[in-house]
Image (cartoon, rainbow, N blue to C red; front, side, top):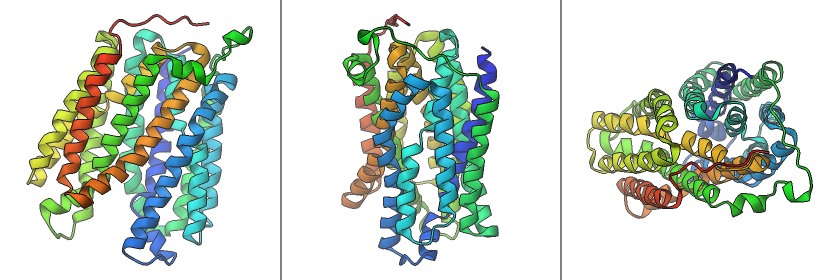
Length: 397
């Protein structure tokens, strides 16, 4: 099986999926106001609920889809995710009330997880010695889409209106299903012989290597989302009331994403060479240290510099975790393990903005960076302490 070809196909798919999902970011509050939601706190409340609904349902369903993958394979899981997300977005074209959109976003979360599943598929079809490089490369596909998506979505909504964007998103997601169906070979499905060899969630949580990796995923996402969600407010505190505030805040995200694309492949190769168990806690700790100076940043250009450094490191963490899940789990439970890890990732996506918003409201937005830096550094120490350095040989049935 040509893993390099699989990686390139999945890179394109992740670019499309991530770009599609981020297309609504520039206009969701405007779309809600267009549906009659009053400007101010109510728009903020509805926006938060709509995003949180997706993360909540995704966290609930991710382990179940992991079990589905263990039985039917990751290719079937990719097709399932693409079809479900595509159809739900096509239904969003008919959104006329915020309640309707909220329900559909919750349903959308139930089918989501394409990008995480793509890691699982690639990990099963890639040689172990190339795994870090392959997943680091794949990570850049999602990041690239996340940079382009908001720009494309904003332009489409300006030209054709908000509703048409959802139709385009749905159509693009269906395209990824066709790419997966036609171009990717099926992955091997493990067949258990006897009751004792069947995979279960109890086996997943009984594996201490996996539980600490789930913890690391939650820590990373919580820290990342807590600062990202408050970035517009932080930029405003630096530059004040300016006409191009949205552009300046968006540029922070773009710079971080570009740096991410540059850094991910190199960090993936570093993990392959020295071992992800050694590299992961070091990157986590260094990322926390890079976040801290942003507390005292009073220049937008200095902020751009620190966020670029932050982006260079950011892309080394989640691919390392995905690689370690592959290396530290039995084939019979890998789908479940990736599903549970997705659940912790979605929970981090949910908790990060809530914690960041609370800290910013009670203290100031600068303290959000203190929280994120400390969480990553403490988490790095725990991961270093809990994950054995020697690569554990797992029996593959």
